[in-house]
Image (cartoon, rainbow over all chains, first blue to last red; front, side, top):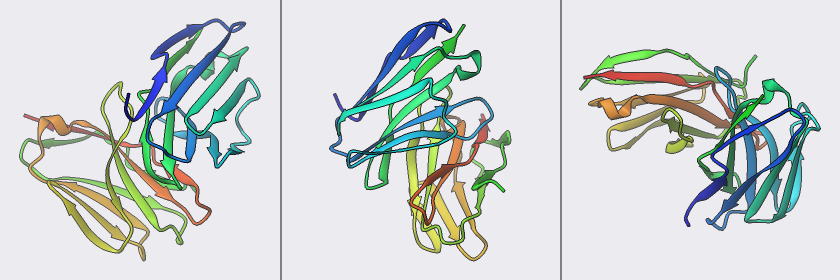
Length: 111
Length: 110
């Protein structure tokens, strides 16, 4: 495996479900990110893990919960989502903020 | 004011022409600028980075930076249909935060 891998590629979930998105980076980077990409909107930074510190966008609802067990793995736990949370969720990694590399994304649909 | 602004397009150019994509940013102290290409249904991929005023060329791509005008552009020479994609401008500001524009959709017409 090379680069940044994300699973699953597609996810359909009901509003009462709990699911998790997974990301793994094979680049030796020291920072990982979750982004949300909605139609006609800029990429929205949700969470950053850099050197084991978490920085988050305060506008992200608590129904999104990140977990970073080590520098290579990142999870996004989802619960009681809303239809407006349907979007493409992208994981990325970088070395000190440079060399941003994105994963292929998870297309999430909340029904 | 948005951190990074781009014309969403769509921009259409004939094959072989020069495509010009523009981006402005609000943080005057920003030092790092990036262009990403995103094909439909795919994730963004980095195609150019620029840190100093002036032009930076890489194959058919030229990035231009003017910090005084807070303006960065991407020129694609000899445009090919395979260049049809959304191009995202990204800026790393003085707070070390990364901001993306909404992207410009480019269509190269054969």
